[in-house]
Image 1: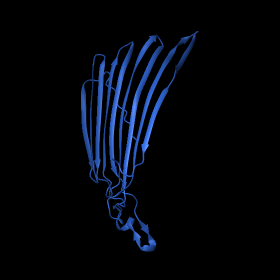
Image 2: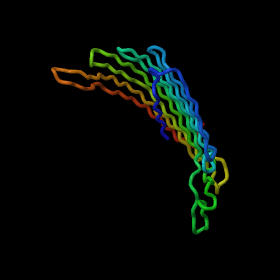
Image 3: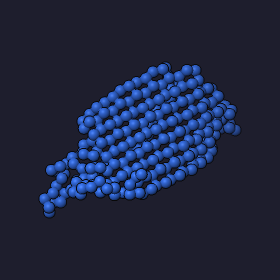
Image 4: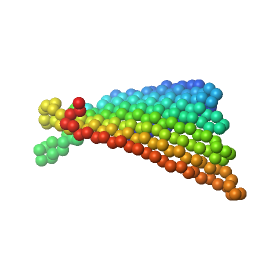
Amino acid sequence: GVINIVTKNGVGAKPGGRIDGAFGSFGHREGNASVAGSNGPWSASIYSNAIASQGYRANNEYRQYNGVGDFRYSTNEGSLYLNLSADDQNIGLPGHRRVEPILGINKMVTERQGAFSPYDWGAKQGQSATGGFTRLLAPGFELIVDGGVRRKADQSQFFRTTETVAGMGARAATDTTLTTGSFTPRVKIDSTLFGLPTKAIGGFDYYRASYDSDRPVALG
């Protein structure tokens, strides 16, 4: 899955917060909390979310936790900012439903909510940190420098056990990590040059990624 949370920064905001929740069928529960505020040139906003659900089928339980924090210092000449985020997800993988008309088997009808793989699961964790600053070089000329690090880790475990085969022996697993770093300085122009209105952006993007993926039989 992909999590993309965009939060408002706390620039100019009065101190305040919000807490809300929701619930639904199949044991669905959700909670959200946020707080934001500013004091002079300083501002901050923090958001967190938690979701839990038993799922429609057996071995279909889902858990998700995530949070984002945005911290800024702003003046007329420029600004500094730091954005931090983290997330954690876990889900059971129930597999398919057996349909074999020749054998008289149709689990989509007789056991729709069952699980072919009662113990398989997947998980994901993510962390990121992005920071940067802006600086007004001259009227209409602004320097913008951003950089950050993002890490994503995925794991999954599959067992020999199915609804037709007993035993808890591990069958296969995955353990993958992707780390990406970035540095993106640029200059933004919004001015009049040689009597003509001019808008332009110039700079460069540098990215470096590290990828590692193991395929053991069982996660150690």
